[in-house]
Length: 149
Image (cartoon, rainbow, N blue to C red; front, side):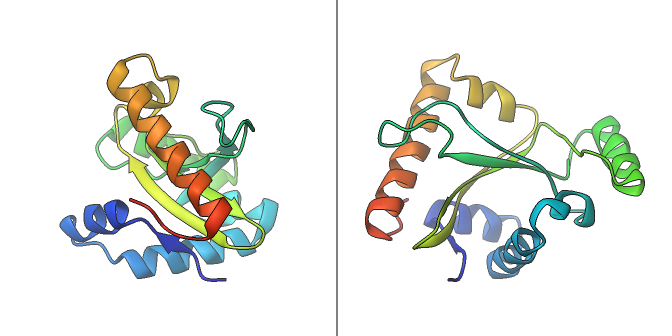
């Protein structure tokens, strides 16, 4: 099962002159490493689930993985140190995704610095709307294997 990307994420990456297909391949490789992936990959850091919003009534379905920081020099220094030490890498930049045992992985969107954690907290109507949209995309993918967004 190949990892797929939403149209929104593909467009975001192309606008940054990044290769979305290469990114998906890097994600697949990282996932294939299992629990050691966080420490073996420079690009991907701490992986975790969002307790909310729920996807089809279930918490911890919508996931995120921390990505290497791009604009915060201090965070990048800490990321580099953690990578060299093979310790937990965190940032305020995250890839939102969902994993399904039947349909595979869907990469939904990248939440960039400095707002990734704020969006996830859903403290504003705009942030709550974004997270609920991510959950709806994840739910549709899990139910049908089709990619929305």
